[in-house]
Image (cartoon, rainbow, N blue to C red; front, side):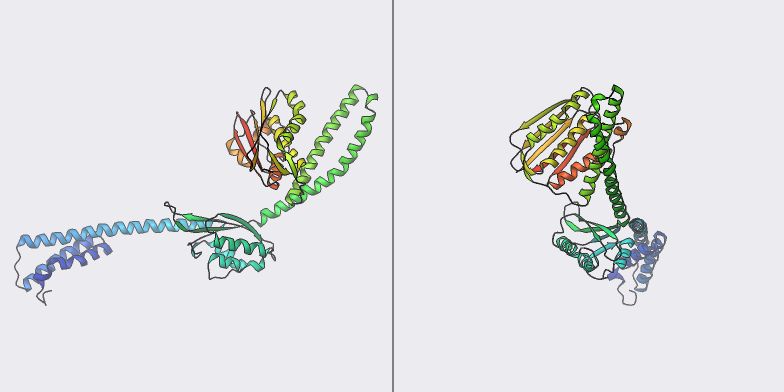
Length: 436
């Protein structure tokens, strides 16, 4: 500045960018020092250029530059603290997703990976996925290693062309027998704009093995129980023929044996049906079914039991409600729902069966005024062998298979089932089936 005699032209403002830069990069103290130094350098340059600013002018420039340096230092310190906090947050988030058992990655709308955690990177290496390409391309590359490559390839291509839908799929590796469950869903911002997609992968091999062992156990036990049960039933029939010649006590014993064998037979039938459902070996004999008549038949079947318990039964059928289904299986669905409703209704309670149809769907609702189901248990009532806490506390007989079988049978008919319940007020179960 002094060498070119541009002190008056440039002025003290020429030092401002450098003072601000030093303050931001180094801190408040060095920013103030740089401002003071810049002010004195300007004074020195002015003296060399034979300019004679007043003391007030010189002090004003020195103070302004010092304030600029200190303010820049404050801004720099805040930026550094913010960056450190952001780095800590990012590190924690990274540690969190790396510590999960599931493989997780986030992709942009085109399928390119933005974030990937260590479990997914490890699974990708174990499966032999390529290191380059979009996620759908990498997943398609391993289709030849799976037990059902055609279905897998179709699903991957569907995901590539329908990115707006969430999905859950399972696939098994042919050589190792490992089973993976994949979940994917779109990610959007608060304005609803598409940001990309999240992909998760979970190794469920152990869970699947437990399920296979459980199903094999259920099937084996069911078949093994059927043989002695057949013998018991046969001898019971023979004893029933001699019942008239027995005293009161032997007759009572015979009735107990008959009821117990019937309960055991029903349990075996339920276990076998569960095994058939899991193996997808249920054959439905479809025909037109009048749901109002089917409901009335089921009500007539349980009315003696309901009367004994002091529970009233009512059928509310409005209009034609028909579906194409297996009459025996639909009757089983209705019987299970009515049995549960009566079982958990106190004396003086009521059970209402409502049948409706709108030409496209049919709806059968079984509502009771029983003990209800706690909110935290409602998500589990359709699981196999699940018994509600109240059922165990009240010693209500049952195996926990009724609702699981009911849901499976409804699914087989292309329908759906839903449950609404309030603890202490009652339960409503609605079955929706396609109209005939």
